[in-house]
Length: 410
Image: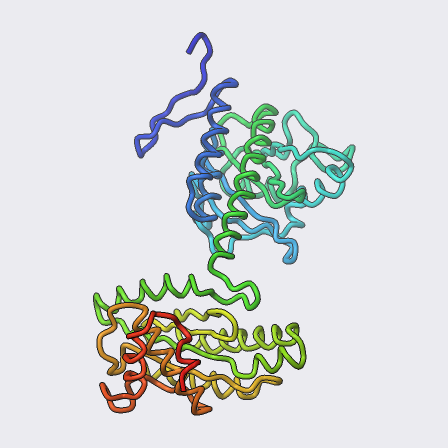
């Protein structure tokens, strides 16, 4: 290594080379490894886990955790624990949290130190209640003793020292990175705290990137006005559902809804009022869709919505759609909704593709709208193969596969 030791190499249980990085090059590699680990993660949970594990190894800790500061609830909530877990610690805790008043350093640091022009900096705590080599990050002249909460936690879990680094995101204290060593291990020092500060900054950059990606994914599958799924989300879920239907007969049901009276509201009261009507119906659809476990509710565009049920019997889907029609008729400003249903649980013939199920649901919805029906129209329940809805769908199949074709037919 050209006369400079870079890392105390250790072979981990899974065969990877790890250990405590020593020297500038070793720590630089650890920083790069943390960033790469977060970038390779597929979910926010995986990203946070990768950061905690990389920080634990980089600081030669036995345990590491990342927590988020939930201001509205006044608590630090643990997102992930890695390494040597003690009683009460789980890798992905559902509700492990601690009152901020027991660990006040984050809040004090933000308001007293950082707000005065300081920079976020990590600090060390020990089971003896001292901070080696540095004053606490709170008020000027504060005693160099650790917080009661930190000291008690270290002692309770048989740990000798820890380093705590604030994670700052979008200019605000987001949470903290916490790395601990067991009692009897060398105590963290000022150099470790400096390095933890760097690791926390890299973690914050990774979290910001993850947030941007998650927001992009959310927008890609979400209708911006109602917050429901969009057509893309429906297409993907429906393709998956039909694969299950072809594999094991899972019932797949599609409800297509056309909100009546939207054009009149837009023309007479304005599009802002029309948008409120769309939002209200979207909320109503979400409420009714929750009656079907695993259902997806979406806005396909304009005044057209849908509900996709996977698993529940066709009769249960019809019952929910009937409830939706009843409640929609009571919406102020609107004129109810026309609902059409196509389900593989009914005698509708082969359903080789999502297009076929959509065509049947569209035809049923067209019949409901033409008849001004107060209840949903269900494909396949009016004479089997001779069902008028099925015949309408089959007749339209000769035309280019454009949805909404039925609306212009009389």
